[in-house]
Image 1 (cartoon, helix red, strand yellow):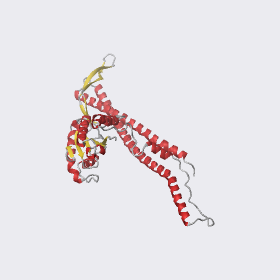
Image 2 (cartoon, rainbow, N blue to C red):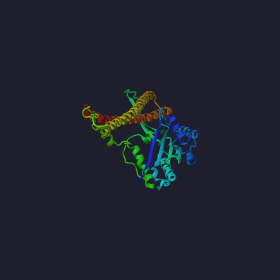
Image 3 (tube, helix red, strand yellow):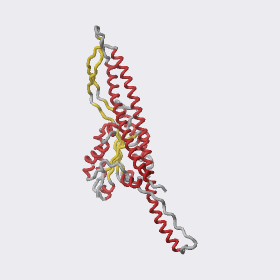
Image 4 (tube, rainbow, N blue to C red):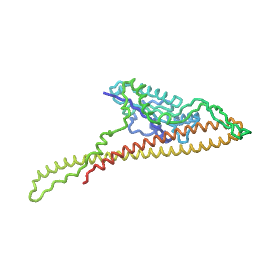
Length: 374
């Protein structure tokens, strides 16, 4: 029997999302799928309730140098194993040890300084853990070279330039995209988790690159391309050849069986269309969100470029560059680089979503063309 390590990472897009998660983690609201008599077995590490979680969150955010106005403040890691793998269900995995190793792994991934809270739940059907982190990372101090205007040649009137070095201090930046966005990052997280934790307990990794859930792709396309013919009409009798009552009942039973078989592909197609509609709706919402973020990043980039241009003009009129002004200039340069990266990442996400929409719409169009006339 194959058992799997299970892991997913979710961004909390608002403090309301974080509050909803903590109220579940600490059982501060009713949890229908949890057994209240087993709640005392749960373990909490770090923040012990919602209030303490937000206190720790605010304290960590106060230490961060750069925070985008719409930045993700919290990410949540969910960890579990196939329930049959646990020792209490006849398996070989000690759930407490497994969850402890999982937490230590993600403390290395996100940096222990960003850890807020962990909850090990032993009161539900399968033991699992919820880990909360602030997605912040640190940059090293470095130097930048800039060509600056230091004056004009009195004879030719041409501007005099020289290259100067400026120090850029180390900074702490809040950015969930640094850890999660971009092609392959989530897949790599899954692989690393399996190698560092899952393998130790004899667990398997899920199929790499697999995206379909519940309805497999092969079954889905088979459903939407299956031929749907005209339904067989019910049997009719004339007065001259009407059979007896028992024969009519037998004919009706046979007709109902045949009708059920003919309706099955219609039901399958309707179900497939419903799934597609839900997926398209979800993608549309994601597309709108990414487009909004891209527009905001582009607007902020324009503003930063304008500020840099104004600073450059001011620098050209001075023979010596004031230290504070240079520091502002370097900060704006760093911010501009960050927003350019955010914009590029958003554009890539938009292109991926367009491709996903096209891939969903193509088989539906083909199915409508192949559908026979009734």
